[in-house]
Amino acid sequence: MKGPIERDEPLEAGDVGLPYSGVELRVVDRQELPIERGCIGRIQIRSPQQMKEYVGCPQLTKAAFTGDRWFRTGDIGELSSNGHLILLGRETDAISRGTRKIYPGMLEFLLKKMKSMKDVCVLPVPDKRLYEEIYVCFVPSGQITPEDVQQNCRQNLFTEHTLDTLGEMPMYFLQFKIFPKIGNGKSDKKAIRVEATQRLGLAVRVSDNQFKCRGDV
Image (cartoon, rainbow, N blue to C red):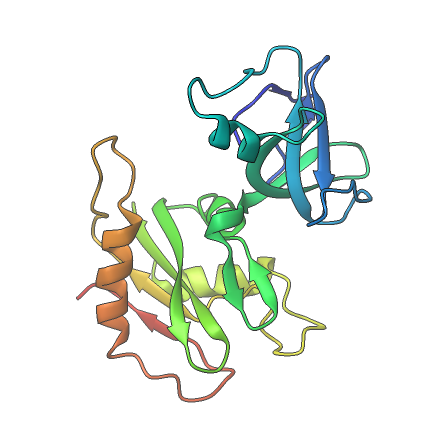
């Protein structure tokens, strides 16, 4: 979500700061009821400066706003104890690993902080047991390997106390020389996913707790 956020101190991963004065922000559940700080939900904002409607598109306007004018951003996140917004990603981008929802934006944020990491893309791949698995595609700017990225994930992602013992830990790590781009210069995630899935056809998971790493092909 891009919006009126101000920062007053060093931020942790996913922390985009406090809303500006005059901007209301809340995190709600599926019934659009506000939830407590520290709980993950849907982000909504409201301010006198926000748009009134989609001109000529009443259905879009109705879908975008609640009855009391809260704007549905489509983002997922939580409010920290000090009121900062922790942005986890887009609701539509969530990866369904078993009963867990993994938001790739958060993983990408963490991995882009690695030394010698030029670009990274976290995507889902079909999995018979868990519905979807997580794979990390990355482009290095220096000496960095799939094993290095895997180790970084092991050190920084929550994996304990989960039924599958994996938590947010990706299953596959694929190194690219360059990412295909779309017209606006952003990475073409659809093309990356097609190529990565083809390459993963050669990667066989030996057991539930083993992770496959691949370099350039």
